[in-house]
Image 1: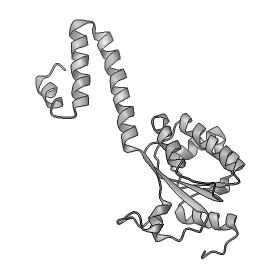
Image 2: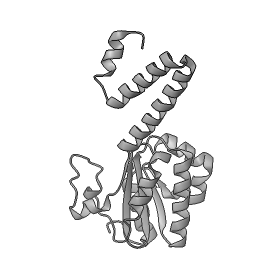
Image 3: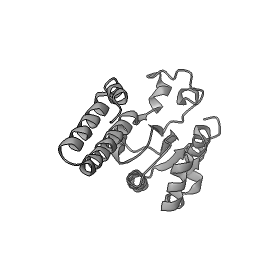
Image 4: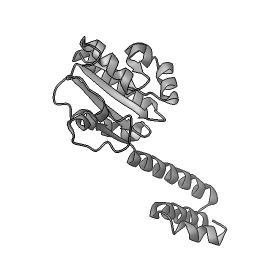
Length: 198
């Protein structure tokens, strides 16, 4: 804040960053440096959480198979695979944390009725927190009641460690944590008692 060119350059960026800067500067001048730093850190943290929740999304991607979405240049797109009847695939993109669990729950409400197999694709989830694990545990218990097999696909290293520490992998079964979508679909076919090509 003491260097004018840095101060001015922040005003050329996002308005939210400029707001935090002005608020911190005003509190430094009018109140106290300690208070200004504390408020600035809290505001910056809230801003970070909001931005992370904006870039994270959850979607039912099985509809790509039905031609409702463009899969672009993604060689791992679900549209390039044969998804058996009775299997629904959801994908979480971005950090899976307390700021987006409601979006996850809302996306799951798109399931009109229980399905035999539910695949949660997490290849783009780089981080997960305890709240998200709790929500996934609730989903697992719901799946047990509805006789739905829950399968995870593409779990990244940090989420895998968090799942292991919390006992979630043992609870769901290590065989239901697959390296990629192809392995997850193979697991789904085995659960459904289908031959490899179906």
